[in-house]
Amino acid sequence: MMENYTELRRAMVDSQVRTTDVTELRLIEAMFEIPREAFVPAKTKPLAYIDDEIFVTSPDAAQPRYLMEPSPFAKLAQMADIGSDDLVLDIGCATGYSSAVFSKLAGAVIALESDEDLANKASETLASLGFDNVVVVTGDLNAGFAGEGPYDVIFLNGAVDAVPEALLAQLKNNGRLAVIEGRGTTAFARLYIKDDEGVVSSRKTFNLSATTLPGFVKEPEFLF
Image (cartoon, rainbow, N blue to C red; front, side, top):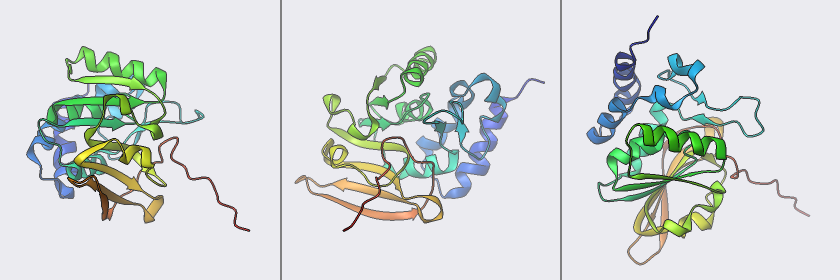
């Protein structure tokens, strides 16, 4: 049976996104327009719009990767307050879905991915769909991509134990970094803001959870 992806996309927006205090119309329209099924493996296309994370690598991989669940992604993206002229660094873009959404909201997107196979898939899919204001680059996620910065917005596609100073240094003055910090039920969204004098502050916003991104796991500390 052929899936009606347009109807599944509408249901995702109406039942998962709009119902969780996401009101930014440009973001809602982008998530309705972009074919999420194009960014998942062929065997999981019928699951592209479920209310859950979707693996885009094998779950048994050394560092399994996924697309964030639609509702947490949308809430975090809305918090980032992306403007039409903004330069966005999308960290952990995986197959490029988040970068496609941001391409509709921003002036340009640098999509950073540490997995070369995923980066290649992201480049191919984004190019085939005409997202020509996105450039996919490879490198360690926790190092960011200073060569194209500084950025108006930095977005992390997953949870971290802590935000490295290297990422905050890549924000423009008046720039924002949106992230989920912590794990499980104690995790929360945090917005970092660099003011016009270059001073960074942050505020905890709402409870939100996601799988941890590779490279952001804090090593245990031994106290003597």
